[in-house]
Image 1 (cartoon, rainbow, N blue to C red):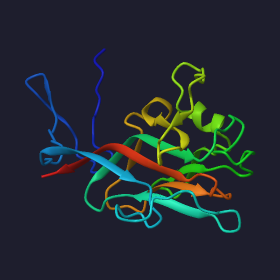
Image 2 (spheres, one colour):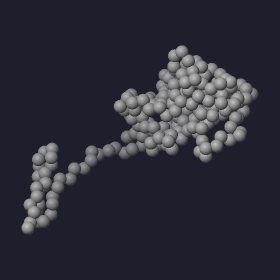
Image 3 (cartoon, rainbow, N blue to C red):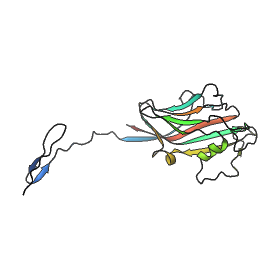
Image 4 (cartoon, rainbow, N blue to C red):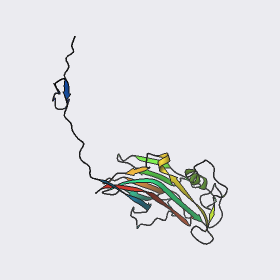
Length: 210
C-alpha cells in the first residue's frame, strides 16, 4: 500500500513538492562572510585593561582586592591560549612560600574570566610557589632547578612559568568575543609586595574580518 506524506516548514507552513519523482526543497545559503584575518596578540594584564596600564602585580590586595585584566576588543575576537607569569624576589625561597615571604598567601592569586552570560569562571587561585609551578607543569614533576637568578635585578631570585590554556580549557584557550564586556582577570587578594617583580603576560591571536 502506498504511503502518502506531506513535508512542510514548521515556521512558514510552506510545503515541499515532488516533481518527476524528485523532492524539491529550497536551498538557503548561509549569509556571506567576509575574508577572515588573524594577527598575533600579546598583552600584560594591567590595572586598567589597557596595554599601557600598570602591570605590576606586586601590590597589597589584602584589604581591598586589586583586579588586573584584559578586555574584549570592540571589533576583533581575542583568543588567549597561553599566559606567562614572572615572579622575582630578593632571597632564595622555598616551594611552600609565596616568593620569599616565608609563608604562602591566604587567599591566593585568582585567575578567572567573565563570559558572555556574566558567569565567573575561576581557573585557579595559587597561594605558593609550588601552586604556581604546578600550573605550568607538563610532566607532573617540579625540577630541582626551579629557581632562577637575575630575573629582575642582578642578584634577584625567581621563576617563570607558562600556563597553556589550550590544554586545560577550550580549544584555543579562552575566547573574548568582539564587542562584549567579557574580560580575563587576575585578582590580587593578599599582600604580594614581597615579590619585587611580579607580572603576567597573555599570548594568543585576534581574528577579524576585512
